[in-house]
Image (cartoon, rainbow, N blue to C red):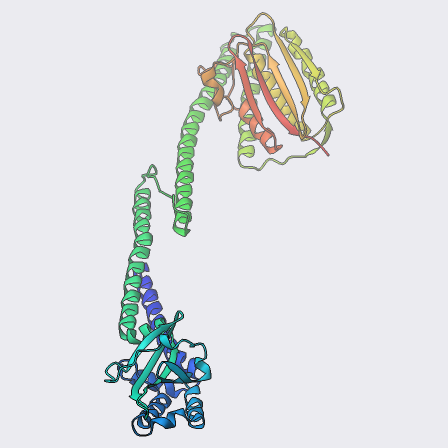
Length: 485
């Protein structure tokens, strides 16, 4: 069932329930006021005559009217008037007898009426016998009969009941008010259904069109999620999905390009040593290595090229395991200063042969404990150091390791006085299979996996790695490690 039909059914149900409750309320109100269920019948069978009297009022009025015509002086008898007062009290009405310009009798319920000037004027023709009158901001419904006492003095009998002008108006306009209420409910329900349907269906159609375009491959489509309701939340979620899907596809395309580049680069890096090995072997087979010295040189060349191939394969295997999260890490608390000093002592001999000085500067001046995997951290520092060595072209060849301590982590900077990196290459140096030197010269680079491996290892340690470089001055590679508690 569509949302439009669901809304229509729900609002129709709301209308029916509202009308049913209104009718029930209309039936219960008279019962609540009068305490008599028969009042429902009286309410809806009553003739809407002008200001009708209740039955007690009608009976008393007929009696006093008869006395006024036949025995007017009996209207001065307090015992008779008291009986009339009791009958009228049941319907909250009262009786006033006026003789001349004075009130000679007034029911207790009408004691607030003191000034006879507020009463209806004497009218012997008795044309306007029923009406409403306002006395001291109160409204009264009255019926009166004017006559002459036996001494020919003016007399009036008035039966009065306090009424609400709003109630009187409501009773007189009840059919109209009921009709207006019914029409209002229908109008409000219709407008509500229209606007609610529009506010829901229009954005849903937008979402439908957007998802169709996404299904056709257009991930540039913009999904508007400015609304704050559930549809806005759905739109926001779909837009996030679109962005993530686009990023995933872009990453997949990047991986595909990287894979193609990897195949090309690895093919080049494998072909070069294999070609050299074949040349050495052919030289041996052709008898070129006719002396012990030449034979030793050829065999050393074969061994060196085989070692390069083995290192390349090892890097590929390691990177693959890191990328698939299948490389186990043995984290432990290590004395980082002692670890780095040992590393420097281990690699310094090889660097000195290349006239490169390697120094350590501890800026913390304290013992620093870090959480790390010794073997993998050594690989990180080796890869970064080897990368620095390959780009050492200046006369002064120095590598310095700086150790700094922050609140929650330790920062290590490996700075070299190499040739530096051009600014446009900096965002890519940690990328997979990326090399600044596209010639694949083995003396200035390898497979392009060294820094990518370092980045993966540092991330597994929960740290960050980044680079700063100035062309012709040198390069600094920073990485962080967590401090042990």
